[in-house]
Length: 534
Image (spheres, rainbow, N blue to C red):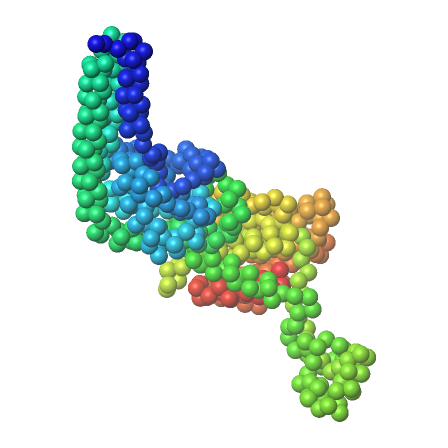
């Protein structure tokens, strides 16, 4: 005897209840690294700004179907301060290969080294991902079989869930017109279908789980190699930036694409091969600045009296070793009558702008025995002078010159950040042609006069870097001496590979207050005194 409609509904409800319980599964994740909303924003912004990441994700998606998620994981593993990986059981089956790859990366000591330079820096983390791209491709290729089986498992699970949902809906629709026996039979059929689909999915899952370890051999070595390569690239670019005087603070404020373009320009520009020389010049100049303190000692000229313990002569210090004479030492110290070394140091008097006049005539192309060109040495020195000016809060002007009608002026005001692109323009510009002293020095004098009139700052410093001699007009020389006396500036000369230009009767000697000759283009210390005096 049949049941009432309510009985049919109750049976179908029980069947539906069994169905919904059997199909409920824990949440599965498609990303390996646990992230928060802010991490996701960092990845999204970086991804949208990096054409390289977008192209790589598209390529990996087309070939393996999981590219964007894998790149997001690789980025977050390098970027997050505390990167935590999900358990394997939490992962979507189609992303188990990603989990294995990221785990192999994260477990290597090389990746820990990489994180020292990428944590908190989205640009560096993106660079690391791109540097590891070849290794990611290889690991995905080796895991292709496991990936395909995992995707089959996922598809089987989805089909099972879809079929079960369809059967359940059909059962509910027929429950009102079928008797209890029919409803129960239909319910049993649904449950049987679910069990069969689940068993098939589990078998496929086991096959996929077996395929993953088969892909593991060699993955650890590949991951270590990838991390090592990424460390080399990221640190190399950071060193390149430092060599050109671009600090971390400037880089953090720089948009991603601008930073990428700057890095590419630094790697491929005319003076890219001399980055190491430029870096050594800057380090030398920084060291000389550290030595330049108030009342710094210089050439020893005698003995005087005073209370400066840093200059006490040894015979005075002997008194400290004799208990009976310590009171005498204390009394002489209090009265300022200790015997001290008296030295005459080089006084840094500059307050106005530092102006570097750099010869870019054809002969500056010449290189020494070690391959360093005269131009490279001159530009490296000029960039160190730019640092010197920034440190002293002085304006800097770079004047590139050659023939009388060839000159280019680059101004870097003290109150404004130095634009890296403008710095590169200054460093890479080469005019060619002959050599004229009058044109750049006239421009330098006019700039210092302008500074004195506008900002009441005098006593600027001009550094003339050249490898040639040229004549000057007597009338121009008279005007130059008048301007020099009125403005109070100093002129420093650097003759590169031109010892004749530094002789006592040379034009350069007549123009300069301080003159030196440079023969070894690898020796940055030959210009060290410049950075003590300027």
